[in-house]
Figure 1 (spheres, rainbow over the protein chains, first blue to last red):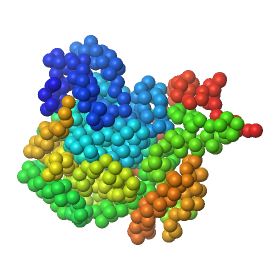
Figure 2 (cartoon, rainbow over the protein chains, first blue to last red):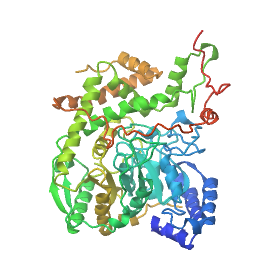
Figure 3 (cartoon, rainbow over the protein chains, first blue to last red):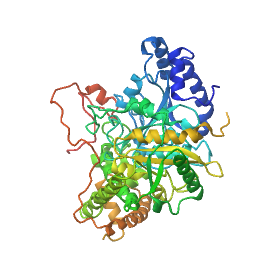
Figure 4 (cartoon, rainbow over the protein chains, first blue to last red):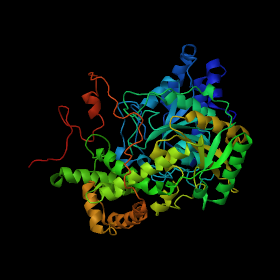
Length: 489
Length: 98
């Protein structure tokens, strides 16, 4: 097996220079998936034949395509992102067998950059969940402790990168779905600024919150992939045309003179191991020249209730399209008693899993007559106050640091019967989505039982460069990514 | 504010959401949604007088594009995933008009 400490840049350069071939890389990763994935269930589908054909095509065009930023680099795509002619299920029974007639814009961009798609990754159904237990395809397991969840909703994407089954995963983040599993699996994950990355071809969950982003082993790799997928897309009216900075302008990173804010109050009550890892990370940033400042975010505690009204409300509307008419699953009905209404209702009851139904119900309630103002509108107003808290804080600091999660990965089944307990774990991640701000999670060490912990940094809108610069500066002195999980093959 | 959720509220919401819930699901969701909504009650304590709502965090609001015709999804492609494709480019559904 190849050296486990490769980066995206090294793999790309090996293909471009002829030291390796796209086909050879592809075979090595496919072999490892074959050996390891039965223990993890990170993939909903592995595309061996398509990946090999694509790799051969790249090798044939190597000279012509030499400058492509991901030449021959294997990637995975979360199964909520459309891939033409390849099953895209959202880890839901209701989309069983669905093969999109088009590629998502990010998939097209990655393809044009020379990437080789190895497969689609498992997740919570329609990206709703924090554990990947709400998948119609069985849970994914955490490579660091297979009796624990990998986080969610992008649990398969995170587990695949952590277990070295692929150097890059592409996923979506609506309330922490990239950052929380990145933290739980000990990898880097970025939620870009709202509007940075086209969502054309993403199965919509909550349209004012959803954003697509990369997951990789290192900060530099995430910056490279971010540059490939970011940019205006005529097919997504929320995408923006701002320039995406070249990684060479901010890497290698430094923290000299950076002002980092810490909302101390919200750190009360978090897990001791997480707290220690977080304090150690702040020390490293300070040693590298950052100054640490206490800040206040008075409305951050309302992030969870705001999120769990706004996201389900938008989901209840977005998921109305799954009705058994145009694609996916349709319930079998008694022909002489079948009505259109029964067909809709039974298809949706049989096709959706419990968490998705719970959120559709919650969202429908929050939007229904008599409750709309009290729940939905009030939540959107408090959202404005949360946004104002961040705007105020960013007048004095360049970045805000918190742990990514209040605890390390929990056990499979631990919160399955208590949705509210599961939701409360999203306290540090939801505000980036509510405000649209960018946020990154970087590995920040381990608990005493070797469970990964994540450091989250947030910055001003469209200032991902600051996140990369600080996170890379931290990573230089804390290269936790070099440690790989204890997986037997 | 809202009284605790009853099973008939859940049945009403399920109808609005086009979900045919089983009795067990109705009972479970009545309990769980009441818990979540009780937790969300804390939003009522926030003074939002004069605060406008943030419906989305978008940077560019309502960008326009030239109104130029472009090719769209071909009918065969649109029908390819239908669970019950009908004749002449239609989707087949249960009879609506008796």
